[in-house]
Length: 238
Length: 242
Image 1 (cartoon, chains in turn brown, yellow):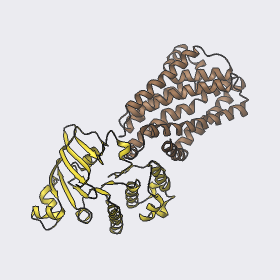
Image 2: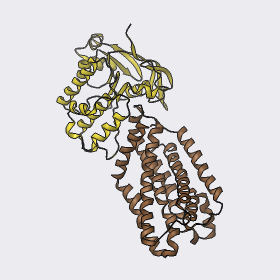
Image 3: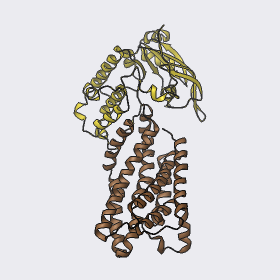
Image 4: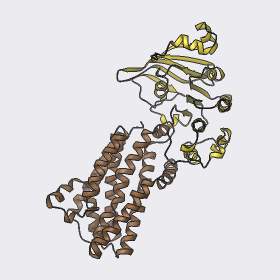
């Protein structure tokens, strides 16, 4: 635990020194919340918040987490850790915790904008929202770790992360509301894990049950379980 | 009987059709300093990585400090320091942060602030590692290998990129480590460095040990004037195309 916290402390500092992290993890979601809130008005702002809150998860889980690990492998930083008493678990947990802090900061800022600029309230209760957020985060971070474990180069990691990130960013209801998509497209977005998380978070914000709520939770947690297992088994230092 | 610190038997490794190691047997005893010599691509780094369990060997066995390096990696690296030929750093990390983080990985690390002073880097505490000169980064890499207070230190191209004064300063630090009983496995292209630091040298060619002995023995064996000439005679031409 001490080793993990030491790695985490340094990684968090490094994270907040990264322009990418500040721009895409923090500023970008806030700007989108401001924009969507202004476009959709007070009636649509709660739904917009439910979606935009997931952008931080998407950016940190599908970009920050796998690309940092792939970069460290490419630069031989992981090799240096391999020649030390550090465990892969401590390293991965520290990375995940670092990205989690950024995601929480992002969602917190988005919440502050939604609450104070557009009067959004979480009608379904913060506990329910937090459960949806945690399940979404667990699944998306598992996918990010899978990308890091299964790709063999920085270039491949970049391609795989982009292939997951951009469809989820545009089609999961984080920015473009699923409600305005053609039925066929909306049905197709069901293959994107983030769309289920966004549905759960939106339902928690407006205080209604999500369609197939239990099934969506089971899917997200199933992805998380499989993803973490495979990522742990396929972990490589170089 | 002298205690064996590192022992490999029949260590073999291939990368596709390239056979990097072809059954290497090597022994390093406690307090001994052994140099591994060879042309570029002779298999030196592959040997180091396979012997320490950092890369999976295709065949053969390795024991380091009585441990299986693959199965006991974390226990082993509490007692072994490694300086890689190419060291990797996190982007935007500062010298002090890197040292503090690295020290936190060990149960009983040496005082990294004192090591920074010894390696002439005390004034670089708040500097970004990326902003250091090549020589300063090299010294930092060696310093990190000293952090565990190692019983065995493995140094892959120890003084590449260092100016003469810095080389001598690093050699003095190695001397001090050796006087504490630490064993040294040195990979080097600098024969003056090998003569200065090592009591024994092994020459690796095409993944095999072709000669082994003290620098004087190797020089005598090759009928050469010095170790550099002996190395060139024993290892042969590197195969560069003119």
